[in-house]
Image 1 (cartoon, helix red, strand yellow):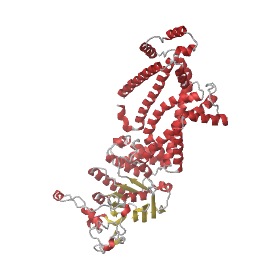
Image 2 (image 1 turned 180 degrees about the horizontal axis):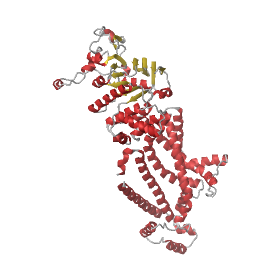
Image 3 (image 1 turned 135 degrees about the vertical axis):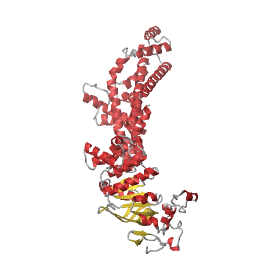
Image 4 (image 1 turned 45 degrees about the horizontal axis):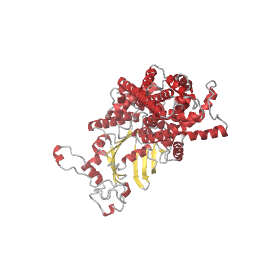
Amino acid sequence: MIRASGITVRFGSHAALRDVSLQLDPGQRLGIVGESGSGKSMLGLTLMGMLPSSAKLDGQLHVDGQDMSTAADRQWRSLRARRVAMVFQEPASALNPLRRVGDTVMEPLRLHLRLDRKAAQQRMLELLDETGIQEPALKARQYPHELSGGQRQRVLIALALACDPALLIADEPTTALDAHVGLRITELLVRLARDRGMALVFISHDLAAVARTVDDVAVMYGGEVVERGPVAEVLRAPQHPYTQGLLAARPPLDAGQLRRRLPVVPGNVPAMADLPLGCRFAGRCHVELPRCAATRPSETSLSPGRSAACHHLPDPSI
Amino acid sequence: MQVFLLRRSLGFLATLFAVSVIVFLVMNVLPGDPAVTILGIDSTEDARAALRAELGLDRPLWQRYGAWVWDAVRGDFGTSYFFRVPVSELIAERLPLTLPLAAFGMLATVTLGVTLGIIAAAQHGRPGDWAIMLLSQLGIAIPAFWLSILLVLLFAVKLRWLPPGGFPGWDDPVLALRSLILPTAALALVQSAVLARVTRSSALEVMRLDFVRTARATGLAPRRILGRHILPNALVPIVTIVGMQVAGVVTGTIVIENVFYLPGLGRLVFQSIANRDLFTVQALVVLFAAIVVTANFLVDIAYVLIDPRLKGRLA
């Protein structure tokens, strides 16, 4: 239902996304991981047609077979909420503070589905119930500041689900929440995607959250997809040095190992202005070949559905 | 809520008391003698003294103030030295002109200011925004009395669409309303220029907030996002300024009614100060102060109606 190829998003001369390709089938759950500034949120906004007006989009983007690469906002508006919906990172500020949350959830029901007030209310309560909100009738009458972070995120998910979208994009939905609340939210997303046959794009820097939520994962760095494949395989046998570094930087689970210094990926994500010409990871990579700085590695297929973009893949045949 | 109301009522009375003391003192410090004003400069000193005694002007200041307060509390605001009728009658006679004028002025200010401000915000950085900002800059820079004169020259003298001034009374509502159009415009144009700027900057600030992105992601049309999500959240600063503008419009009637020869309270204030008509000035200033304090009180109530997070303010 989503076919994106060669997506490049530029702000002036800087590319926030470079040559990103993506395919998403109904019901598929895809994770996007990467550090801050890797372009993962920008990718989410691209799929919603919500790039800032200063951004320039190149490449092919098809949603439901419609070419949306050059679509106007009006055209995107007919897809938002109905076909593609999105949940954002900060539930604390993502809800209109002056509206009762029930009214917020009812808005798309009334406007897009043209339900009358009573039917919309009924449906709103079902949605709140479906997203695991206790006492939905009571909570619907409350304002965002009266709810907890987890409840607000559930309201936002209910809002996103209102028009029964075929794809839900969740951009760091657990980052602002306590760990155990985040866990409940990822469980909820998986259940909703399964029950509704809805595709899910789960954007996160939290590898554990990604591992338990999605089937496939794409690792992003510097606006490019550097590695992708089934989540279990990528996490078990990462091929790209960046993915390896990300995995090594996870805090260990047993206390004995905690005394060790936490490994990090050395260096910082390069600023958009001074990205290297060749491989964007060049300069931070532990296996750097002469050609890395000069030429950009293209995505090499490793096995069906599995690929990486690196000049130094250990074994292209796996 | 009851504590809040009680505190505000006490503040209301304290403000009126302070205002009346200040006016009383200022009017007594100002040079000029009501007796001379009333009797003329060629009157004899005996006649003036007799009149002063009749008006109670020969008593000490604090006694006169005490007597005024005592009467005012019982609803008697004294008798005008100059017009020789009860002040309350004077006010009742002129209120039906000034009250509608001020109300129309506020209505026009809010309608024009908020509409232009929102359009400017929606057009941010584009020609529409620039045009509105330029106009509002002009509006802020132009003094209201001068604008009034320009309006009269254009619409009354040159085009002859509207009367240049005067008020025919409410017997013929159409004529009455026609004669209030130019004064209302003169009152509102300057104020709405200020309000447009406040509305624009407040709306621009709200536009950057996360829930606006959520509203876009929900597929809502820009107009609806503007009207239902951005504007309500931009209202708190707007309401604050509107509250202050009530004072601006009420005091603005003093100038405007004089320019347009409208027999209202504003003109009465002006005449009474010139005539040293203490009781009339006193009553009018206290009345104006009461209107302004009430407006501020309503603004505080409005905050809570707008933003449920501010419920604590009423405690």
